[in-house]
Amino acid sequence: LKNGLKLFLVEDHGYPTVDIRAMVHTGSVFEPASKIGLTAIVGEVIRTGGTTSRTGDEIDKELETMAATVETGIGQTSGYIMVSVLKEDIGKALEILADILINPSFREDKVELARIMQKTIISRRNDDVGEIANREFNKLIYGKDSPYARHPEYATIENITRQDIVDFYKKYFFPNNTIMAVWGDFNTKDMIALAEKTLGSWKTEKVTVPPLPKVEYGYQYTVNVIQKPDVNQSNIGLGHIGGLMSNPDYPALSVMNSILS
Image (tube, rainbow, N blue to C red; front, side, top):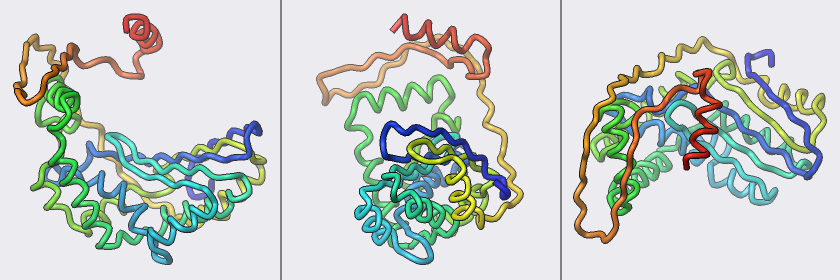
């Protein structure tokens, strides 16, 4: 679009629905080490915190009347917002999507609720043996201080303020740092016009995304045991850092992996 938003459209008239996935070039690997968990809260509160014109609860009610969903989140190397709606309500759904992306309010009560939820996750993370194994495995192959292996603690969640959330949003959430895919029962020409109408006012800004953290490929051969005597099961993991998707052998490796497993 004119503001730099990259739009991918796929018409599919098999079902009377439209699905949208927008991805923002950001991620948890870019959050400060003292505020681990920041992106998880941003990804949640950009949706639950509502906009300058309506609360998150009001958005919930609007979506319920349309049997539509809008979900947001931020992973390690990308943020996302997903929409699913019946084709007759795509105009209203896109308007809500645009409002969330352009005018989030990050209300303090929802920020605090997100903090509480993150602390609850921390308190329960050692209840599942598989989760423990995956967490510690990542530390072993990436290094315990790697952005790809670190995880939030109570102290890092406490360090996160509403202003941190606003600042993170203002650093990355712009149309020229976003790609959006739309697929479903629509006319391409009409969808482009609707996207321009709803998202065209999203202002372009200069965005500087840091390079991805460097991964040290140190293949150390070790055997590591984590004791948890209060459970009657064990998880065993073997492996090391794999290749990159840009590797020309990636397709062959994917096929090999499927056969082996």
